[in-house]
Length: 335
Image 1 (cartoon, rainbow, N blue to C red):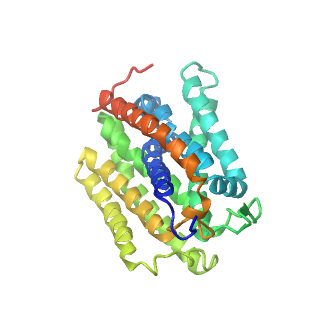
Image 2 (cartoon, rainbow, N blue to C red; image 1 turned 30 degrees about the vertical axis):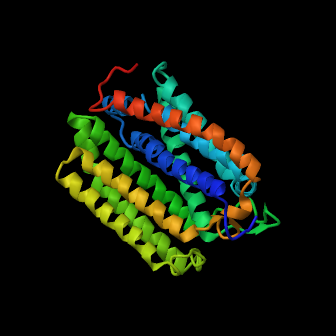
Image 3 (tube, one colour; image 1 turned 45 degrees about the horizontal axis):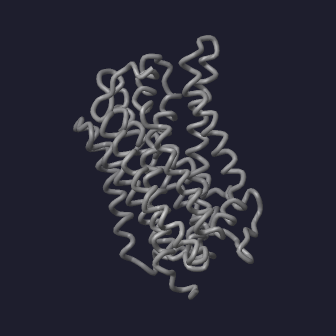
């Protein structure tokens, strides 16, 4: 296969994985954000309504993460191998965080004396998951050392000043998304509580992004120098859109428009994601493995395609159905 020109099936699967990542970040991002905000209040009534706001959705949202992992393993095995080598510790922390977070979410309703433990686990699990995802993105922006289709770095290659800042930035970004979701799904004191935090969270995201950019020019010089934004100046339009959306989040919160803060945070995340796409393309492992060179044989891609045209619409319809059934303001009493 021509390494410079991926096949149509390779492009299809790259698009499926890219879209699944974006859907996961948007959907699981808000319930991780609620989990992060959960640890910032001791008001039990607030905590109860926070968990009620995500109870029908959170486990289904993680289906998209499974699609990403299974899709990479089956259709781009080289990428899967490099990622697992580069991010073994982050993936381990991710799994531990997701498992402990899920256990804590269920156990806190069945215990009294140890509820503090499960509440702490729910908060810490959500925060750890958000941080390692953001740090992994930062490590990808820096570029991964690859030799003979294998990761050629160390176990802590992902821990640099720039990637630490992107990890912290995603924690605040998910918290902002979670605050927007709380506003969208709640009323009364909790809604007002979330509204008060949106401007501060938006400012924190902007500040952390600024510090990450400063780190890429100073203590972590060259962290994003390999990206293709300089070759594709039109890609900066997505970065400008992301910045405008972040400002709009604050304006929406001040205007008390319930759906606007969440929608504009989604726009901010989507525009930021598209900026990364412009920076990375045509690499799946920046800046060493392209879509074409990483793809599985055409026969495998074609066989998996027939399964995808059945499974993916079912997953999408299920997701849309859940959000339709539980649309509108939430109510207490899912338990």
